[in-house]
Length: 178
Length: 108
Image (cartoon, rainbow over all chains, first blue to last red; front, side, top):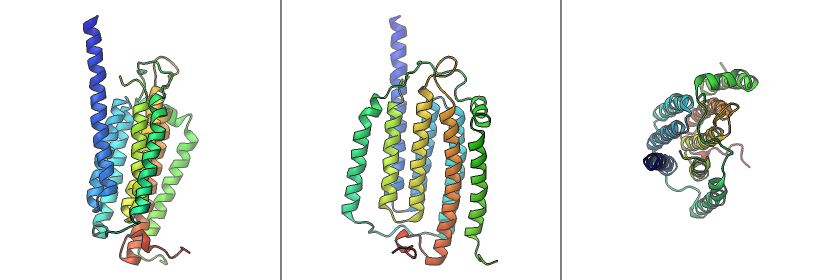
């Protein structure tokens, strides 16, 4: 029994360690995005962050969603962004910007938000049955919900994607009068 | 198990704040778009984390709703980045720069 408890505690702390490491890398990637002056390096930070969040989805047993995250976000979106950076042949952003006072205020407000929200969030406990349901995160479960309960939002999103596609083509065309 | 959504929600808050800081403090339009992606992504993380720990209909924990809404957010984020980058390209043609401080035609 004690051996079993020790193994359980080992599993607990192992998961905590994995979570903390992934979270630290994710935060570092996000900081690279907002602090580095070169957009290409920022895009690489974004990939790091998105892949780490996909890892957290795996920790949360949301395997299908982790795959979606890697394919759509870390794949398609970041490739699109990198492609545009290459197309525009950007220089690193010029120094200057809003100045120290607004940035200091933004940092202060952000830290205040984290501190104010942090305590209630950490104490937030769901009425949870510890073990995860066997179906959770499967393609079948998510797909069923998507095509029954969430059918109309799904339809609306498909229309939004279509209009975004048309809009992007129109906006990026060279001669709008054609 | 990390038995509560708390740590995940805290991480989502931190990522959201970093993204918001990027939107406020940067001038490059592409960096601002990437910061918006960070914020949308942190919202997704919060959704999936909470839905993982809510009690399921049958046994155990975990409902699919958070993942489905997250999926919709993912699609909207892809649409947003496509339109946003098209606007950035159009602006670059006009101004030879993606500095958002230069886009002031419609500003008072």
